[in-house]
Image (cartoon, rainbow, N blue to C red; front, side):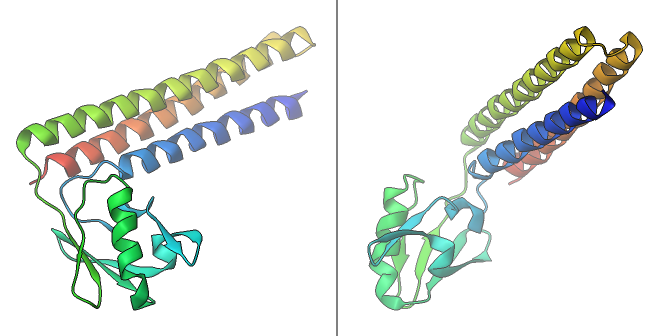
Length: 187
């Protein structure tokens, strides 16, 4: 019976880690006013008829805090890269010098920074709700096992293990929020 408990605990832990990974991906899209190659992670370039991630068609770097430089492996891709960036609705206006595509990332206003913090808070809360839902589902599984013959003590221990997992992942989410808030509010 403890194999089943461990199995459900592993599933819960994996699902909670998945929720945190999703949160990190979503927060990476919230730009903090500093140039970061991750801002372009979702951009797909039409590479000879195939939608290809930008990182597979060019080197993306940040020569300074306000600039993203995109050096395509094939210079004939410059117009496609510019079009893909514009079509991605990230709010960037790319330019090129014949060699590479350059994006100037404008600094954020104080009001915009506060809006981004609110947006991050919403995503943080969504992640916490996901973790709590996973906890509820795992506890329901433990109760089912209790009805199938798992001792009350083992069921209580399993539920405590689920709660411990929830606490660990909730603290991790809080830490991610504090880092993102600091990143956004730092001028």
